[in-house]
Structure formats: C-alpha cells, structure tokens
Image 1 (cartoon, one colour):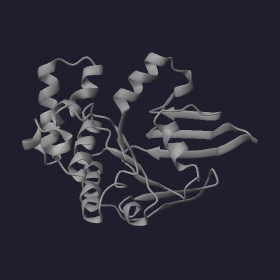
Image 2: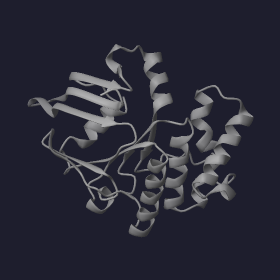
Image 3: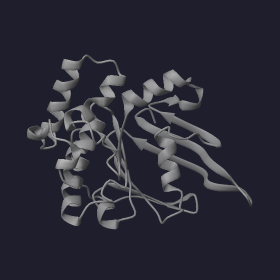
Length: 232
C-alpha cells in the first residue's frame, strides 16, 4: 500500500551463539500505515525488541526487506540512511537517555545540532516542544531536578524535535508508576490524534490497551495482529 510508513517482507534476524545461529526473528511480514497507533507485545525473548531495533535502523536484518516510507533501507548508503532516520523517526526509550549535565532545553535541541540548525532556532524549537509536553517553565533545569515522568516527557519532546512522521517507543513507561504511565500514554494518544504514527513495544496489557492495533510476537514470529477499537 502506498500509504505504508513501514513495510517489512520476510524480515529475519539471527545471532551467532556457541550452539550455532539463533533465529531471533523468523521471516516477519508486516505493514504499518501512516497515522496508526500500534503496540508490539510478547514475552521476553519473543523477538519484539529485535524487531523494534530493525525498525529503528539500529540493527540490520539477516534476511528480508525493510521499506521505510517506501525506501528499501538496505539500498541506502550510510549518509542517506542517517538522513532518512533523522527526517522520519523519533525515539523514546525506557531509560529516558537524557544527558545529565545539559539543560532540558539543550537535551531536546540536541538532534537539531546534528541536523545543522542555528542555535537560536534550536532553542526556540526546544522551548516550543517543552511547552507542548507541559514543561515550558523548566527549560533551564537539569534532568536531576525533575521527576521520572517529567524526564520521559522531555524525551518525548526530543523525539518530536525533527518533526518525525513516526515515533518508536521501547517500553516507554517501564520505569514509571501507574499514574505517571497513564499521563505518558495520554500524551502519546494526543500525538497520534495529530497524525503522528506511534509504534510502541510493551509487555504490559494496560499500556497496550491505549493502542488501536496490537501485534503479538512469540518465538520470533507474529502470532496475532488485531485492531482493538480502542486508543487513548
């Protein structure tokens, strides 16, 4: 389909072990359309994190093809792939990954440094996004001065700074209490309502319930793919 942000065909990933090759992912086929809100679920070792790493171009597949906004990533050189990732993808991780000695504003603006934006425009964009996630008054604060939930909001602001079409979130509420988790999931729902495609990995059913589509992995394969009729 022409509107697929992500399309994988026969995607596989194997790792060398002392006992031989271990197939972490086995010939997965999947399409994710623009504007979808999808949860990837499965127990530890099911292949969901391997799959997410491949979607984020953080690893390369052993077999199969991955099309990101219609482009086969295997056919792109290093610079072209980096450019496509920066334009298309925003990442949110369980551990926040904020730099402790940088202000929240500078943490959010960091991807714009690599993209070559001028300092004033970087700072203006960062403040705009901190305001969007409810932290506009904390721009000059250090990460250590705010709560875990607030740090995750900063991480989401950073993921949005390049105006990506797609956000990949790997266990984004894993370090948060249930109340704060609900706040973060409401924010993802708001972003999806604005048209951003959301793909999140989670093992928690209450988190996955916010998504409109749930894909379950087991032993490196997709075992179910269903629309939930829900969403935040």
